[in-house]
Length: 83
Length: 159
Image (tube, rainbow over the protein chains, first blue to last red):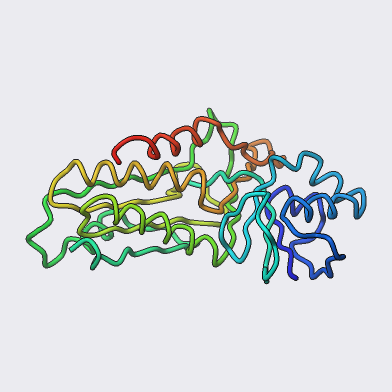
């Protein structure tokens, strides 16, 4: 599964994207954020406040309770500031 | 008729020409009675800012603006709709975003343009980073709660 990061999430994690193999038991977006946060200092730093992290699965916004089964691409980013 | 309108959505680095975009929607037509345009520009924040750098999520930016535009077309009787959002480094005074809404009557065009901007701000995947006039790199612009509230008000009114 491909993970993509934007803005300060990308800067703190230190890479724009990566492919990951998820351990079993990771079913929802919230599970994914908790697991990522445990992967090292840079992830801990980026995901310190998981509630503010916005998530898109296959380029559509989803909530943290959304199931991630079938996702090809999951993007993590801060609240948007376009317009 | 509203179902037949295909919105023009462009995500681009280059600037846009507001007059040309209006002409693109109205040329050769006699049924449009109102065109509302909104342009968003980069401010210099009292001289503190040298540029904004807009990062975006390619693919999703087009898709999400398309979903927002589809909602606007469903909700208001529009005859044409153009949305352009720039990315990359943008200097103070330059354009960032454009919405052009065309309709028979002004109210639909005003409301649709307003709705689109409120939703673009809180749902289109773009992020602004500041470059400061003293040469240092500023931070990421923080999302404003007021922008979320502005988008939320469309959920309860007008339906």
